[in-house]
Image (cartoon, rainbow, N blue to C red):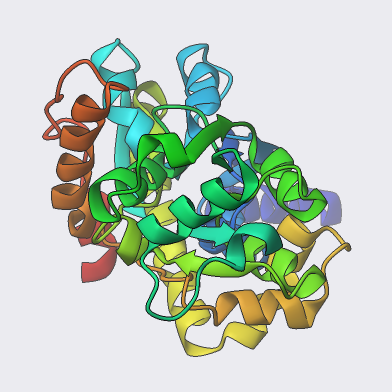
Amino acid sequence: MFRLMIGLLACLYAAIAPATAETVPVRIGYIPVLGTAQVFVANREGWLKDAGLDVRFIPFDSGPNMIQGLASGKLEIYVAGVAPLAVARSKGVDVKVVAATAIEEMTTVAGPRLAAFFKPGVSPADAFKAFAQANGRPASMATQPPGSVPHTTLNHWLFETSKVATSDVRIITMGIDATQQAVLAGAVDGATLREPAVTIVRERDPHIKIVALGGDMFPSQPGTVIAIQGAFLKAHPVEVEKLVAAIIRANDQIQADPASVVPAIEASLGKGLVSNDLILAALRSPASKFTVDPDLIVASTKAMQAYQVKLGTLDKEYPLDDLFDDSFYKRAMSK
């Protein structure tokens, strides 16, 4: 009789107890820059797991390289610059931008040799010209591959905004880590960098100077976004909405109490090689502007496309209506 009662109670508990939540495996490709901070904060706090996601992070050195991961089905989520995505979609890569993470995050820095020519009252064009005349060669500027946000914004700042002569500067493309090391080693004269690399290189060599912020390089510069592979989005819309909600929550925490998110960011981006004080300084840097609303970057993304066509890194402007999906952001905000 006792055993029968135990059995009945066990069956009753199984019937009324909540089912064990199962998580969905997801691979997130990312660029190791501060503009991805919300994703790592949300993961560290357990909010991505609460969203039903079992996350594996995969680093890349540029957005264009990450597109190959999306196209081949090796990634479900892309966290990097928006510029390569419209082209990828036009070539059959089914992907949607569901959230932004940062704007105007790009900067241009000058190494000690070049920085010496950037003096008060001297225009960038005159600084580059004086450097070229003094050294008998153009200044070398490192950035990421053509089609990326860094490459596009550097060209825009040099040749559209600053009117630098093409004979006074030479653009060299390489990965993000290589760019940082090249600046520190003096192998290039300047570069495009994002936080925390900006703070890292300036802490190691105070003679490195910021000569342009994101808004100087490209007004309302669209930066890092969160984009979802189409098949994953269709299969897991609830998880994607919870993901966006977690990103909003992380963004709010970064804005309200940056010191509290430093451990999450240091563990993911610093990996024990960067001090907490340096990460906090990067969060408070004028180059760090966090936002989640994808609608804020639609117009500037369109403007960037138009410039890429002029630059020759894009064959034509592609429609953005199908690239951005703000419904997940709006639903998450309404709740």
